[in-house]
Length: 232
Image (tube, rainbow, N blue to C red; front, side, top):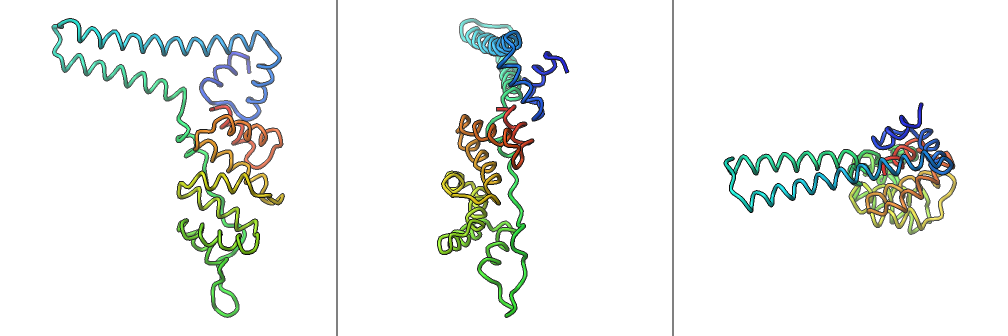
């Protein structure tokens, strides 16, 4: 792949994790490559600014002089221009919310099979995982919280955070994921979900730092982390 192809894929948000690493290496070591990337970035900004100025002038012309076009036709044309610019900017810069929705997938129950104990009764832990699997995340968050608070159970704390993410209580989930001293079983997974929380909360630089750590350590979802990093 040529450097031009690499730059093109970067601006189209199509770099793989390996290509992200190559891109970053060239950006740091090749001055001509870095200059070309800056040129392309400035060019896109200039095009966007130019289109905005054209649109502004068009609206001013509607106000300052009469036209032979029917008013509704002139304004309809302007709306089409706005939609075109919005679509162009949106495709180059997908929203944080869209990226979050694209990459967030709740972690499956790989811990507690949904069975009854020998007395024919479900345990509190089983009830928590049953609620989690059934999408009753308010319930599972509350039960997992109770379990973790009373036993310092890392598994319960992890699934509590995931339950909270599923019901849009992202700030609470992020606090759990960042403040808990995770065992090796959950540390890499907690880091990935913390990165997604930071993305949803608009903490993009924090998110990028976490994603770079995941990519460099080749941890859980390292390929997805590289793809997401290239899109931010």
